[in-house]
Structures are given as C-alpha cells and as structure tokens.
Image (tube, rainbow, N blue to C red; front, side):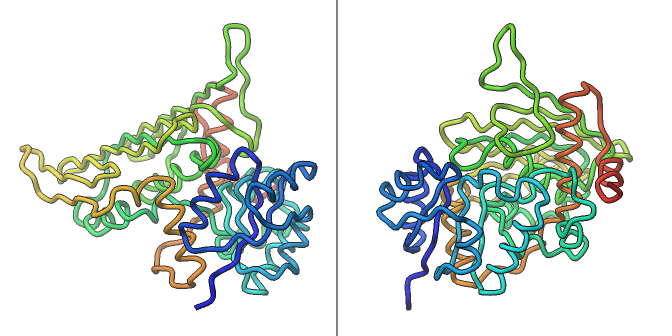
Length: 340
C-alpha cells in the first residue's frame, strides 16, 4: 500500500512535534510552509522536505493526499470566499484538509459569503476536518455507549488543557463547546472570563472576535433554559494534555478522564466502569495521530459531525462575555450571525 503524503503548514516552533506525530501516523511529509513566508525554508529544513509559500495553490494543485494546518495563520480566520474556494478545490481532488484551528475562526461577517452557504448545507466539516476532536477520542466514544441510559446530564464540570502546539486556547474553546453541546445541548447563557499569559498588574488584554491566536486560560459558567448548568476550565499553557469531567444526572455521577470512567449511582454503588486499553490515545498527541491515520485511510467511523453554526455561536458568546463581563446568549449570536 502506498504511503500517504502530506503537506504541513506550521511554524518552526511547532514543526518538530507535528513531524513526530505525522510520521508515527504513517504519513510522509513531502512539503511544508509557514504563515510567515520568510520562515518557510526554516520549516521545510526542520521537516526535511520541499518548501512551499502558497497555501491556496497547494490545495488547488499540489500532488498530495493531505494538507495539515498546524498553524493556519490568517487562512480561514474570517469568511473569505477565496479560502473556501481553495478548500472546495482540495475536496474536489480528494485531498483531505485537516486543521488544528477552527475554520472559520469567527462568527462575524459570515452572512453574504460562501461560508454562509456552506454552514447552511452543513458541509464545512467535510471541507476541513478539525483535529484532534475531543468527541472522537476513544474514551468519549466509549462514554457515548452508556449515555443513552445515563442522560439527560443535569450538571457538568470539565477541565480541558494542553500545550499550545497542539491547539490554541481558541481551538480548545471550540472543542470544549462542541463536546458540551453533545453532552447537554446549547446553553441559554454563557458567562466567561479570560486571562492572558502576558497579563500583569497594569495590563489585562481581552480577546477580540476571533478564536485565532488566542492563548491563556478561560473559565466559563453555562446556564441552560431548564436550569441545568456546567462549569468549564480551559488552558493551552499546560505541558501535557489534561482531560477530566464530572457529570451528574438522575442516574448518579460519572467521573471521566484519559484513563477511563466510573459511573456510580446516588447511593455510591458502582454501576459501570471502563478502563482505556491505551490511555495515551486519549491525549492530544495520541488523538491527533489516530485521527490523521483514519482520515488518510478513508476508513472513518460513523460519528455525528460538528454543528458549526451552533458551536461558532457558543464560542462567540463566550468571547463576547469576556469583554462585557456579563452573560451572553448563543441564540442571540446565531440570529445575528445569520442576519449580518
């Protein structure tokens, strides 16, 4: 079987980690570029491949099986029709585009663009696969088998963290809210707070309207229209992956982490338990390697896709809340996003 080929778009700082993961996934790196074109040669040298400086051209005509956007730069940050055309061209040539950063990265300015049509058609996930998606990790797939009995989830506490080289804070926000939507639905109100790694006593920068380039920590409290609630802690400043969840329902409590889950009833008796055969596959590294292998092979398990409209609305409400200091409504954001 021919080894799959990949062009990587990344930075010199991120390149060594992606090099290790991509090669362990059995994929050959044949080209590399950088959002800063002046550093493309440096990236290519680190990855021992040919340099390239035009990402859209790579998607439209480069002989490759996959394009991996480790650091997408400004590509797909906003609803740019030229970027979507490049993604469509890649898809038309059976080139799989994968990205560690959400595309698009903002809910603003979508109406009136080709991205609005793609959102309505629900095809964004087929044009650019967001990786590594939390919901697709083995422990979450295993959890889904018992959720029909355990649900509806009444309350939840989530901690999701890891290094920025495997997903910015913006990417982790998108990932966490996609997972929350799957667990509990779309909240009526999101209250969020943000702290930058650069923050000091006299400086407290706040996020803009985009997920791209966001680093640091976010905490969130989510309220649902029926009174249910969730608390979320996110960071891209950890040296290693951290994933833990506690969820409660009328059926008891569930503790989940990369090692497995334990379901206890309201009397403290164990109802069900699962231990991951290989906990490393639930880490950022392991999940990325697995998902890249699946996408390159074309053998991808049937799983619910991302609802980009809902998740983008939730992320935008969270970013807005960090600036206003008040709870914000994802529903209101969605109405605005589709009417602008």
